[in-house]
Image 1 (cartoon, rainbow, N blue to C red):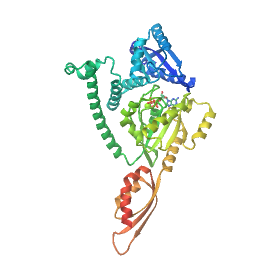
Image 2: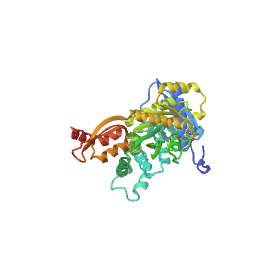
Image 3: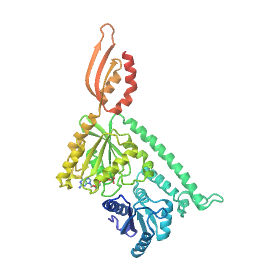
Image 4: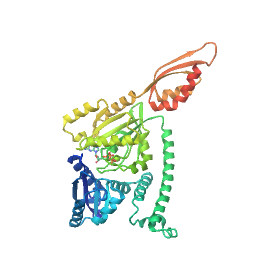
Length: 436
Ligand SMILES: Nc1nc2c(ncn2[C@@H]2O[C@H](COP(=O)(O)OP(=O)(O)OP(=O)(O)O)[C@@H](O)[C@H]2O)c(=O)[nH]1
Ligand SMILES: [Mg+2]
């Protein structure tokens, strides 16, 4: 997929390695390696061979068996490869042992994903988040020569007296991590303020496996120009836009980073400020590429990641995307059966099914509205108009007393999104007490 001929020359040649443990079925390993090959391609490597092993028990020192290690070494040699990529995450010791035995650079899945994030990060926030995750990853693997670190961060003379290179590098990493964390804290505070300012609106986040079509759907729904591409991890930062599901139904919709199998935990940690968008939204649109052979597995991975974020209990609309490529009606019937009523079929790219998607979303939103009745003194006109702005008022009744001017009460019966009650509750409690 060389988008640029000049960079093709620099592409690496990689051997992929996957292990099937006792309970794994073989198709699962195949599809995992297909995905690893896509990741390798995105990172800039051509896959020259795949090697797999069925292992009832993992080897602590080298993960795979010694016979396999020799087989990989031979493959590296015969293909003139310069990189070995493991589908599973390895310990620093395993990486070191394997590199020594094979005589070639080696990365695991997490390392590869981090590398891609590093290459693709464009905004300052994404760059900071990725660098933090990378340093954290490196810190645990600081056994080889990371002499480039002192050049990058320290410069000449950064080495303290009597420190070995590794000690210097460790110290540089620690300092740099501290700086980056402080920077992210500032970004967090900024974003929290922005979100607070937008508290009047219902917030919807697009979530889903990488390459499912979230950004394309965002562009179709909110008229944005978010970059969408047939690559893994095209989006690494959140974009939020106000859009109308109907003329009087505004929502804030956010596009965000995609999920993947074994998304490194430290990446999730580092992407906290981007993923807060998901954590704090009222509703989720879970976008699925239904043309992908492993889409059910992808749904499971997304749900697991949402659980890890603490966002798995939010009202969710399942959006099956790319129906323009679908010809299997039975699959759609089955899915409808499994997810009804919160399911929509769309083609984000062709603009098919978007009106129905919006109706489903309104339905989901309003189904989760909370009803309330309050009695307020009419003098609280600001609060009354606030309720009118954020809620659907079902009835409103004024009772005035004749004898005193300007006194009277208004009874309101209304429905609003749950998050509005966070702001309203103190007022309502205060006013209920007042009404007694
Ligand atoms: N045929 C077809 N292709 C689509 C549709 N929606 C999106 N795509 C394509 O799918 C690819 C991925 O789309 P994106 O919108 O970038 O996906 P994403 O979920 O934002 O991906 P990441 O940001 O990488 O996580 C692009 O090549 C899109 O053109 C669709 O409805 N039909
Ligand atoms: Mg995207």
